[in-house]
Image 1: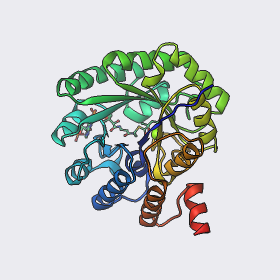
Image 2: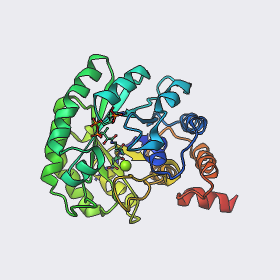
Image 3: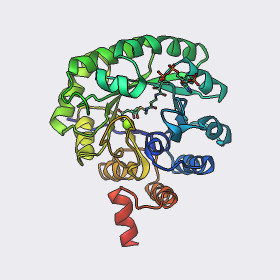
Image 4: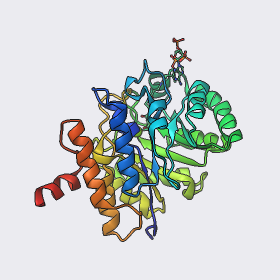
Length: 300
Ligand code: HMG
Ligand code: MG
């Protein structure tokens, strides 16, 4: 088992994190958070979602967020686009990367995007075609890969099937989402091994929510299989409004602390990241969910 030399972090806090907050976060705060994350050296930062504001009010004004960003060269600011209307918004906002998001569970697909898995895949085809025709990169998400809040166990075969379809449509990367954080290391490995029989490992990313405190262990297990793209969220913000009980993503600071300890390169400055974690936590008037952010504050 050889660990990767380098890992790419996909920071999802400004999207997966803030989409789940009870309060609406002002555009200026969302923009400031993204700027601070870029300043800390993160090269992919999800900036928002072009979804229905009736479904996810927290992501309304993602166009304003995009317009106010001082975009850095070499930093990508993807946004979620569930359908053509979302893509049109993303194009108008000059997005250079978008993400489509499907699921391996029929019930979750219905609750999250109001259609079946097959219908969602049909819907994604024109989104991918139109995006790629404009030179916009498309990332694909699959939710509930290790369990569903409505259906329980998920057949890995369904994950493989959806992953292959997303790849055929042109997604450059597939992120495997443990939406409710129920996975454990051996199960995560087994799933990754099965998916990797059909999808090249270097096109796969892992996206763990930390509901059961398993995320870091799961990430380490997957790194051992050679995955080198990890989604995470500063301060451990996050959850999914359509997955009851889903808590935040694994905290980016905790992932970076572990990767630094393993000598794996990320290009990210842990101290700046911790400052950013405290910045957003203060805006939200609570403590970070990151153990590393809490430990460094206590010892300083
Ligand atoms: P729908 O109600 O079936 O859509 O929602 P519709 O096409 O029937 O249209 C209904 C209304 O919505 C219309 O407006 C449309 O214009 C509007 P009206 O005529 O009633 O005024 N509409 C839109 N407005 C803005 N942007 C759009 C858009 N599309 C339609 N793109 C829809 C279907 C997909 C839109 C809805 O279900 C939705 O917005 N869902 C988003 C849910 C979401 O964002 N969930 C969280 C992200 S996924 C996640 O967190 C998991 C992940 O992190 C990985 C993991 O952890 O597993 C990625
Ligand atoms: Mg998520």
